[in-house]
Image 1: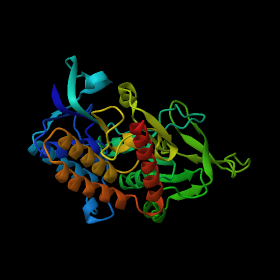
Image 2: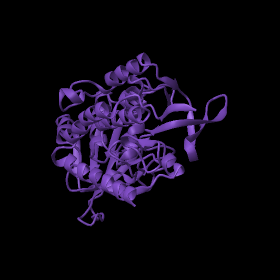
Image 3: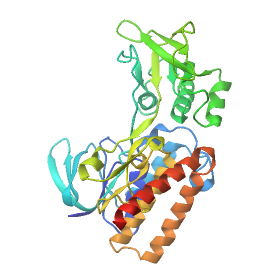
Length: 364
């Protein structure tokens, strides 16, 4: 039996692996890609906030730092490996290029991240319609510009940041449309693309994408307070790429399979595995961290991964309760700071709600 297996090599999984290994725990990290790091290697922008939260450092530099640290601490990494199931008594089904097998671990961390939400409209299956995250992967990982004239749908942080990165890569973002009457992401990101000449059209939506075999144009229109299209406001724009950035949902299928109990919180992406302050789910020995535990940012994923890693080291006897509490308090305080402000306060309240529901179950 393995001591700890971490599913997902993004910021949450890497930090969970690092914190456990720091105290001597033997950790195996599994990722389906050909290199770990997850979203960090798409994030060419500098993080902002405080120095503690790596302000001024680009995502891929943070990723390289975490990879280096995990290697030094002896974390064993299995790449191009898919975890296809988690079963009773912490058994995992994994598949590599060569074999399929079952492993068992004392503790499991699920750090599988999130999936992009789709948006259906006439023409949405045409080549040239894709998620903003897919466009970001093509640009920043594969070094392929996915289009030259882009319509971005959604003004959350993903839509705003990817729009700016498309501009940096040499594309033209013709417009960004947002169904809400206001921008939903950070204004600092919106200001950057606005200064670069991108039209941000609130209370607008896409009507259709059109083209023979691929996107050639799109039609957008104004919508009313009931999100109904206002006839006569349609506008046709020439584009070869429509990017969809209308939110994310936790990639939580493994948690469902494991029998974890869930709650439903729309502001965090939908169904969320109930978890304790230490990130342990209702199934003993299975922990969650990062977007799978509720959609937030890479910085919060890092802190949640640390929490899970420290808690696991404590539960396996590698660190005293006193030392663990001191270390965990640092991450809890960091998370509170990250969730401050108009965008964060709601997330802190919903995270507290998850904890309350988790605690009520354990009192029964």
